[in-house]
Length: 337
Image 1: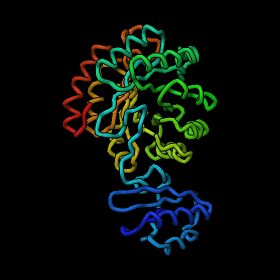
Image 2: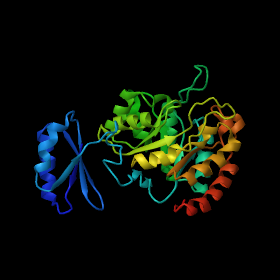
Image 3: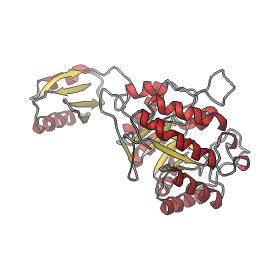
Image 4: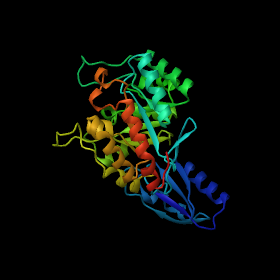
């Protein structure tokens, strides 16, 4: 349920409504818009329970919310959310580019990539410390030593760092070393993990599951939001279809759909979506044109030697070329790098 306040409401009116909602055992969610203020009510099951609220001073009317996801809906927050990450903002007028290796392999590899990413204009570094792999025999990541390397690199180059967390027990450890926690596609519906990253208060990058609908993605985001963490960024990374000419199928439709139904920022991962480096740049440009708030791209100094996802990783020189191409395109859609 949404409580719509009158245009002539006062702060005291809002405080009174919030207090009454709390007294009833529900959670209020206040959103101040340009034209009016709305108060979302979380936790109610019967509209009749809230009916008396319409008679409080300053209240215009009550509006039922039919969507399963509440906090992520534009009904609750009409304005776009901007997610701060270590002084940067995802969802603002600037296009955020996150780049780096799929996995942290060595100090030399990480530092070489981080330096190039920084010089090319990207503002955030990605790098996997813990790697969920389809095969138990594949490289699983360096774990804690990789986190320590990422921590050192972010301090040296001033790059915000995002890395994936796999288990609820690891959330505190990972959060101490990086600026943003990533929930990978395979863990999109790991609800225990979602609740834990929600309670951490750390910025979260939530990737869409490879077979998940848009509504399922938003319901997963709801788990994080419902645990008092509003710093959530959604990521379209390709879905599984019958098509096998690329690793996955980039659902470019998801970008405008999500921008319409949710206030959360939306970024795109063209590396996982295509699975082939020679398609990454085109998919990245398409994502920007479709209205994405940012990109997350895999970059490796020597992709042929990569221990994980080499075929989809851009060489440093190719990433530099892409960054040059993105500048004019970003300006054409009202953004900047």
